[in-house]
Amino acid sequence: MSDRLPGASDPAMNAAIHALARGTDPDATLRELLGGALAVAGAARAAALLWDGPAQALRVAGAVGLDERAAEAYVAAAAERTGAIAIAAHDRRPVLDGTDPVDADAVLWAWPIVVSDGGVEEPIGALALSRPGPATIQPLDADRVAAIADLIGILADRTRLTANAEERGDWLERVANSDGLTGLANARTLARVIELEVARASRQASELCLAVFDVDGLSGINERAGKAVGDAVLREVAAVIAESVRLVDTVAREGGDEFVLVAPGAKGPSVIRRIVGAVAARPPIGDVSFSVSAGVARFPADGTSEAELVAAANAALQAARRVGPGTVAEAAGTPA
Image (cartoon, rainbow, N blue to C red; front, side, top):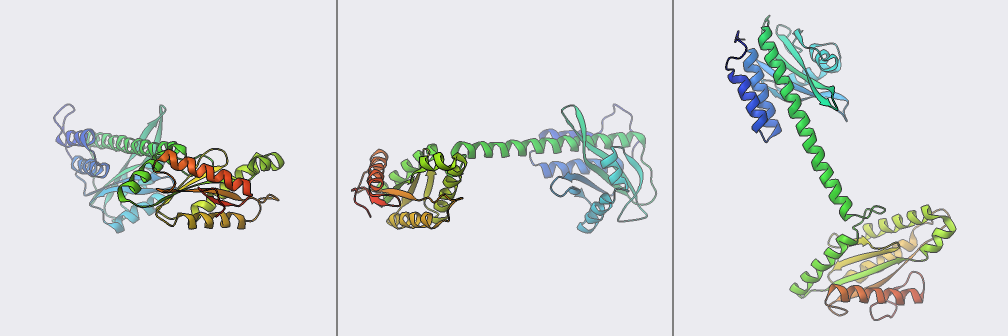
């Protein structure tokens, strides 16, 4: 512990600020900040305990000179809400005369870690330092460690914001590519998948099956039982299709009552018949029974482009509708 005058060069503080400003790995940066706190205070071990929302408890986010057993002891002491760590974390005030939960002969110092949320300071944890034997910390050094605790708060807040941004980016991507009602791929994603699979099948001289499913009489279901029941039917059909397809298949919702399946290879028609049968076997929703019909087109027999395959599958679907609910029709228009 030093008696360095304010304004004098402070290598430990300079290193801590540099680590936060330049660091790209939050864990490594936290270790550097803890190392800086150790250097400033002349302590033997340091730990940053941060609030874990799902666990509703303080957890050790990073430590220097602390083994697993000691870390568990720090967490247990924080949970009791009586020691230095708990006081610093919950009451937002430093404690400079605490007892180390691991070594009763060592002194424990603790500082609050806070972040600013909308101009309001929010406590998120505590910085704890331990030094063997009875010891005091000089006021200037205590202020330096408090500043490092603030740097840890900035690091935690920055890491949280980065994680939130990444999660929001993932969410936006899912929203952009998914149907909100069923969670299946949407028309935008479907168009891209069909384009890629047709190109692949053409390149590899392989087969490809495209099927369009229609929920039989959905408009009548909506009129008789209400749109909520109609939406429930759509979700149930989507679930059946998702459960029935293979990993190589893609299923999407297109339009109000239509689903499209893109199935590489020659086994697509058997998958389609399995889906139609599985939907028919589902129990009614309320007193509403439901079924699907399907039109099937194959590459290259029924078309060699996306537009040709989609048109052939839709023509087959119209033929299936003319036969009746629960029908599967090939592109030639004959029931299969």
